[in-house]
Image 1 (cartoon, rainbow, N blue to C red):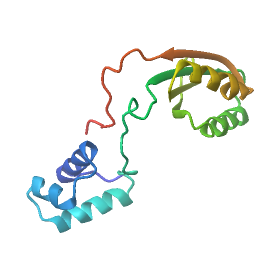
Image 2: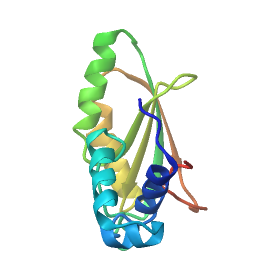
Image 3: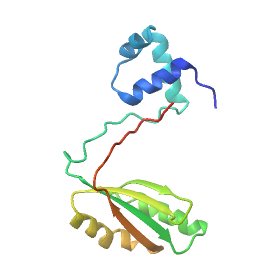
Image 4: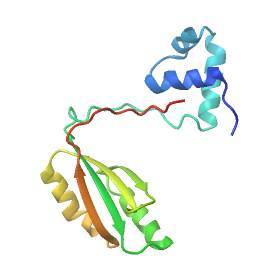
Length: 153
């Protein structure tokens, strides 16, 4: 992977904070012209440093105030069972994030829902249908202290 210079890093920091900034606005803040900044952004996109641009929604305003963390341990761990779990969990639209873990649990799931009743129905009707789940532990966020989607670069 190529080494990013200071200007590339500054561009990435700016876009992490506000991806709606125009090329001209970014160029102005870097004391550069728009054309080289535009080329750098395109290069960062093409090289995969910038995966996509997204709007971060307010979960309360879209009626998804409950954040549940599910810790899932599988009964069987060979490649076929893990691949099957990966495929099945990706099909559940309620799951916002899923990580394959090392340690006491196999998978960490983050789910945002309207209510505890909706979570109960999700577990009862969807998550419980995944046959290889051995242990499922649920945790509920009481208060979000802070959230960021920015990496320290």
